Length: 307
Image 1 (cartoon, rainbow, N blue to C red):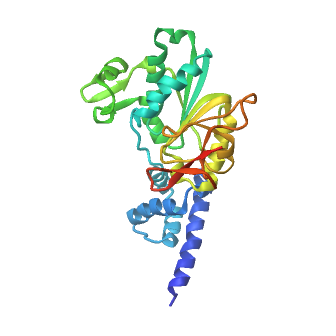
Image 2: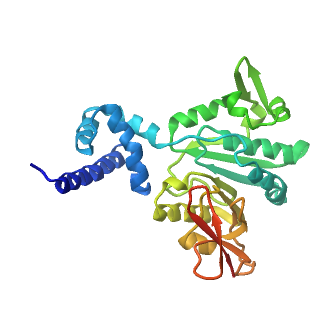
């Protein structure tokens, strides 16, 4: 009879084989996820399929290829809202976008856009800031996600009243049309947004970007994968471009050393230009000395480093 240690060892092997099979079959490198998160999400499928162990689930996957789609749907958590963290959007409206619009051509990327609430919020913000001057600008908002079902919903731009609970009535009236219980993003807003499928572990599809938002996505990634993606963002931004992360996320490693932290509370970073000062007044990351702790939403801590 196999000991507990042997069973655990065999389960660990089966778990790694499941990850490898997923990578080979649907092309997504699941090694980027934290193991505790990935196992927690996969356990949902183990219970749903009645396999309960990774060893049995491995055999189930090989006999039931449709299960790969179920895994992808369960792994990609598409929770988001319009204007999530209103202070962040206020900061973008008052501090970031006016600077970007010193140029007549602006490119923005909503990375991990889920069902479209974030890129459409950005599009509404662009209309608010530019108003009737918008035709004089070329503004493109790229919106990417790895979940094709989420992208299909995003492209439709249809939402319920509940999904718009945080949107002011005046904005709903101006930027949405509605029929019965369905609220639809108006075409002139949708025209600013281009949706595309993209795996964040792979190089970005666009470069020389002015602003990247990737919020509340990296919390599911392992630390090394977070740094890998954040360096992708750094390389995709033009000099002086901005990165906005989730409030429960912090930069670490090389990205922490390269980005300047512009606003701690809103998690706004900037890629410095060559002619800017090599040091910043504040950086957000992991510090060794002279630091101020900053609580975040997941119970961890970020730190403001005074240079």
